[in-house]
Every structure is written in structure tokens, then in C-alpha cells.
Image 1 (cartoon, rainbow, N blue to C red):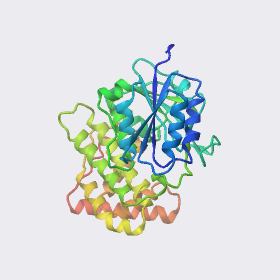
Image 2 (image 1 turned 135 degrees about the vertical axis):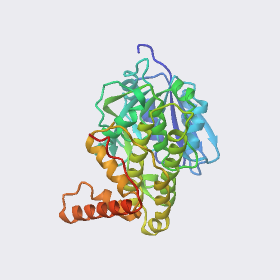
Image 3 (image 1 turned 90 degrees about the horizontal axis):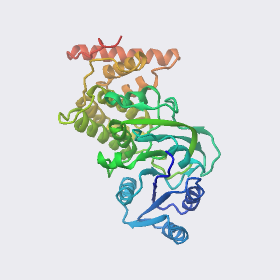
Image 4 (image 1 turned 135 degrees about the horizontal axis):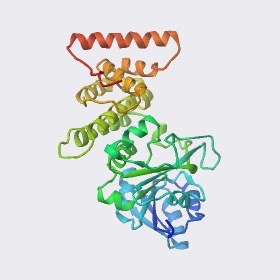
Length: 368
């Protein structure tokens, strides 16, 4: 696209006095200059507001909105309500963006591309020193059309990190589909990721790091897992199941939604249940079991590669066991250790016997 469309940069701010100035400087130095930046002071108790006001007085492209604390989702939604740009970009205040970020992502925009995914580097501080990369495995610089909602399958087969930041979203796409962040949740990006991929007409990934994701912030929710983290994952599972899979009024590929529900159940165990303290594991195990057993989307045709389909099938076989057994099974799934491999096989055998006793049949015939 030759002319510069307006990009609305949304930056939620809560007690980020040690990070905000540096994050803003990374916006100001962009080679792409047609942007507005909406800073949402979400009830900060430190000097965040003062830092934001300094930039407001220096550059008219900045806007400041002060509000009572509503959490990350509430702050982002406030930004969306006040954005006037043609494209939306989210930046967390403890991270940085590269100088060419907006130019790079905007350069990949095409008429029917609703989301441009930027590659995100991992940094051990708020810096541009790279220690790794977040998942960005779907081949870059290729347009992926969302035929039959199969973008959901694409990002399972070739892993793409589930974050809202470092994507350039077409504003019209978000507003037409009434896409907002579900408030009161942790891990709101999980649901946002699903919904944006469900509705997008097409996406594309870039091939160079445009974002520096700070993993050293001890206040980040990804650093401190507890009861609310697990409850949020289960809430998201129930929401997708009731609003997308079981909703007969919604057009879409139910098989693709089914695949994603199984993927998210596995992720709930590996990326959340595994990380929470033992006492919370014990108190919430029954809730996990109940949620998993109440969500039973059907599968009738193969969509994913055989190896992944088989893992999804194996998970469905063991999901009726105790949560600790499901966790061991998934942790040891690809282990080459004889001891762990034996335990995984024993758990699977136990699950098959339980299903047989209860007359439960898990469909596998569609996997070729």
C-alpha cells in the first residue's frame, strides 16, 4: 500500500513507571510516522500518569485516558473505543518495538488481509538484546486465506504464539465483528487469538523481529501462576464451546472449532495446571475434570497431520482419568525415557479399560 494509513497504537499502563518512557521512545523513533498512540492509565498508583503527560505535551500524536483500574482487557477495550486509525496495534508498556516495526508490518498489508503477524523476539529485560523468539513457525511472507476457518488448524500445525501484541489488525475487521477483550479474565489473549483467527479473511506473517518481549518482568501474569490462571483457562474453554461449537446460529466449521478446543485443553494442562502450586492442583483437579468431560466436540474428518490427530485422539482417551494422570501422560508423551514411556503406556491402557467399562467409544476411524 503506497499511502500511509493511520495506525492506532494502544498501550495499557498500570504502574509501569520503570518501563513506560522507554516503550514510548521506541514508538516515537518509528520510520513510519502516521500513527496515534493511546495511553490508557489504568488506575496507576505510581508516576505512570506523570510520564504519560510529559509525552502528551511534547507530541500531539499521543492521547492519555485516565480510568479506574479495569485490568488489561478493560484498558485495551478503552483503547479500541477511542481509536480512530485504519489499523490497530497493541504494545505492552514493559516491551519495546523495533524502529521499522510499523513500516515492516504495514508493507505486508493487502486488500483482504485482516491481520499481519509480527515476529517477536524474547529479551531478558526491556532491551533489544535477543535471547530467543516466540513461536512464529507458520512460513512467513505467504498469505493464508481462512477457507472453512482452517486458520485455526494452521496455527496448531505450525505453532504461532498466542499474544495480542505485535499484530497489525485492520480496524474495520475488528469493529465489524465486534471483537473486544473479555474482561475479568487472565490469559485474555487466548480467547482473542481464537476469535480473531475465526473471523479473519486472511493473515500473513512477517520474517523479521519487530517486537522485543520482556520476560524479566516479575509482575507479569505469565510469571506467577495460581488459581485464577487455571479458572480463566477453563472459562475460555467453556466460552468457545458454548458460543462457537454449540451455537447453531453461528456459521463456521465446527470441526475446526473442535480441533481448537482439544488443543486448548492440552494447553490448559501443560501450560497452566502443570505450573500452579500443588495445593491448588488438588483443590481444582475436580473442576478441570468436570470441564473436560462436559466439553465433548465430535470429529468426523481428518484435518491435521496424522501425528497431531493421533495426539488429539490419545488425549481424548485419557481425559476421563484423574487430572494428575492426564498431566503425566502429556508430559511424557514424546519422552524417550523407558521409565516415562512405560508410565505413559500404562496410563493409556488404564484409560482404555475405564472407557471400555463405561461403554465409551472414542472415534478414530477418520484418521488415515
